[in-house]
Length: 278
Ligand SMILES: [Zn+2]
Image (cartoon, rainbow, N blue to C red; front, side, top):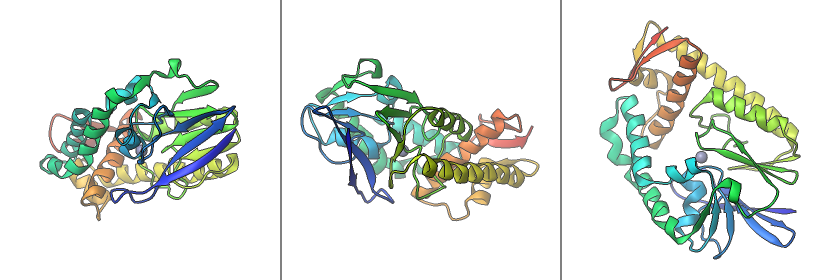
């Protein structure tokens, strides 16, 4: 089996995104669609719905696309808009939702392209020998794929940064535990360069330390209670524009983890949400 990395860039992306061309027994398949067109008939396995991994669908026609139902449902303009709106409302910036239009618009194009492709669920995917692991953490629908001695981790592995965005740090740690228990020797990330097992483990150690430290910091900065808007600015003093959205995504993830641990109570009936120590 041969694996080749194809990278694309876009002004909305801080770093190039990877997609992988896999040649195995005379069969060619891709993990993720990236941003550029793919030849008609190409088989694509999708790790998660984020546009930088799926926009290649909008740029192509006649692909065979394998993804779980959660990913398919998320490739929707309405869902993307609703996701941005509820996140911005949680941090008290619901009035900024129209600023997300250029980004949400991409999901419209991806959604419109779906009828031009043949979409398969993971259990009916025509590519043999793929083990799919549900790996929520970076996004709820995220799947990791083991093919031969390679594991394709999508954005659950972004080796050049430890501030990788997570919608759920606790789910993430459980997912990566599952990945490490599986058998493989090369880990392929959603952005950046592949590594062996040791490279992934060292990075996961750094990420876990950072995410736990950030959860602790959220709980310290919360004091006797605060709105999520105040907490956002205490945690991310520089946040604005697109980084406001990413900061909000991380913060809501930390709050959910602290809530799951029984450490905070959250009032979601108001905008911004109000968080108090439990
Ligand atoms: Zn992503």
